Image (cartoon, rainbow, N blue to C red):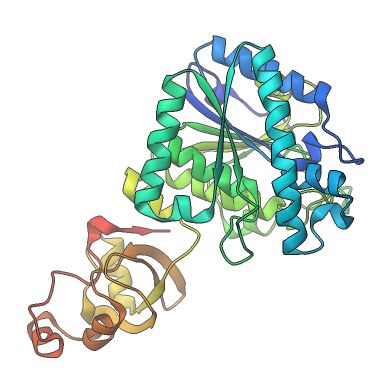
Length: 377
């Protein structure tokens, strides 16, 4: 299980567009300063891949850590939401300046893109982000993305850049995502606590056993994610047919080292869903839940639409077209776009089509959630 992983899936020949995520613990040292020499080696890696024809999107953490140093905030700027927002406002300027300078020195043009959760959860805004990234890449720029922590709140934020990287990969139409980390992959247990832990070089399916290996903590204290966030990112990426790798970022020129067969874990994706269904599968928020019976679960597995007759409980406040979770007897099985608002959905739950008109006061639609507008997880 400890053999070096194959990185061919992320090479320019196989991966026309690549998202590279850099965590705070790699970019910022213990004193709150940018590790500029290391970052310059990353930029050299990016320039080499660009010269080979690969388009690169960067997701860069570090704004809060950098701002906390300048504002002399405790706990790396994460003592409170207000501290984090203030630190991000100051640190994002410094972070962008470093990226712009290093990319410019390498003959590349930087583009800054700050995103909130809503920018990728709302379908129209998601498509706008996708169009912007596509145009920037076509113009030869290197988009550098980060969560807009200055305006994000604890209720409406990604909370970690691992999942943001996976969602950005979907929006950018990328074929691969590399998470550069202060760990060199997924281990059977936390290697800091268990000397017998073994690295898993390749994962083809996110089984319950794989999920159980995750440790939610951030070892450096600078970041906000952990292995659990990386596995969540892998699931989002896989839903769109995007391969994802966790690679060791503690070494100089980490992308080149990974390409040469360095340590890591590769999450191999299948074909993925169509664009709209991939967006649904990757969403982190829903407006409500439709609980369905076992018969409806079986019908959805056969590719059928969700009919009102199979719905047992309607919860949440949602409008027609909002994203709702689909929950079977054993838990959430999918997501879809509601065909009715919550009140009308509740009025016809459990009813056959031929009696729905009397409950609604108008002719019923074909389905509670149409097959074209739902995805199973």
